[in-house]
Length: 295
Ligand SMILES: O=C(O)C1=N[C@H](C(=O)O)C[C@H](O)C1
Image 1: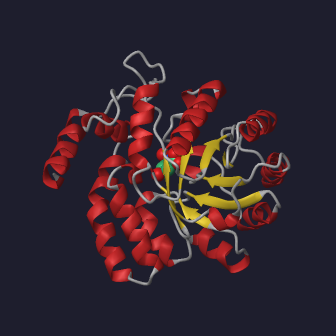
Image 2: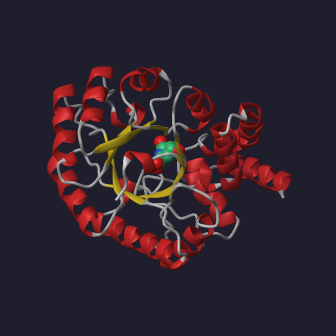
């Protein structure tokens, strides 16, 4: 299982490859994960936003976890595999986290409960209950998707919980990160791709980044440069991936990413489950231009 010492560097949240008729495609899944394992990434996250968690059943998320663990094991890699278990129900999140523990997940990614807009006390109680399961918890703060924003005080109290090992900060600004690094040694990772460079400079220990599925080597190199104090080199590397990030998030994630992975033959199809829908022709053309320029 993971501890806070393991939560640093580049974590890649995986897509869920579907066949054209929207079933999980295990062959693509294996080819895709094997490719990611060729890079010096620090971990994988299955069943997150990028994995289309809103349209996956828990059984499907669990089977993705097993397939990914198998690929990691058979490659002889020891990187942690994290699975998303957060829902807007505390009881369901606890149950999924218990299952994830039985399946050997190294940690769980637990999103702030969405839609019902609970009070700060309710959110704290939610994380207290889930963290008591005994599987390390990474808190996922993404107000643009959940409809709620953690106060600094609540975030600090959640980070103090024994079972919580860190946070993925997708707030889109640096105020929470800057407040947390004053009072906790637990890691905060960037979850807002275009803020990566800025957030590393303000104390983030890495990132959980959908765009690191593309140009994975550049993300790893950028992080390593940053770590050893080569800020200029890290900035240069970041500049080269910015155009990709801009396109990847110009339409709802993970549709552009899946299109790119399918276009490169890494997964068989860019199929999504509704209400996620295929990318526009304009974006396809832009991505095609980027691909041609980088080949
Ligand atoms: O699945 C994830 O983890 C991520 N999801 C974010 C989102 O889609 O909002 C983006 C981030 O890169 C990672």
